[in-house]
Image (cartoon, one colour):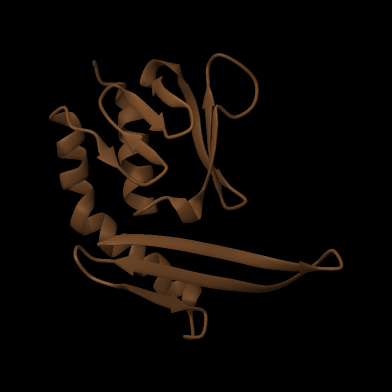
Length: 145
């Protein structure tokens, strides 16, 4: 399954208002299912869904990357060589300074300059928690290409 999340907090006249939660799950050869904040407790069940996907797919995704494959997460892909952004190309692990999630975006900072090398919407990343766990492992261990 590919799980996408889009969490948006509305700001009205500078004051934080309601938070909207939208999770979309897509299975191979299947239509997608959308689950929203209409159901009670999205701040609880949303992370549980992400953790279930991480437990089910995380080890295999990491194994694939370590075996020399590239794993696609939508706008971003991971390989033993580095992190690839559709709009930017490849950033080798040796040049990745930091990966963080902030304000609904995944920001990747490179060692070669100020600011973000890449700035992708979280909602464009499939299996966000798998992506973050594998990227964190690869960044920390900086595998040889």
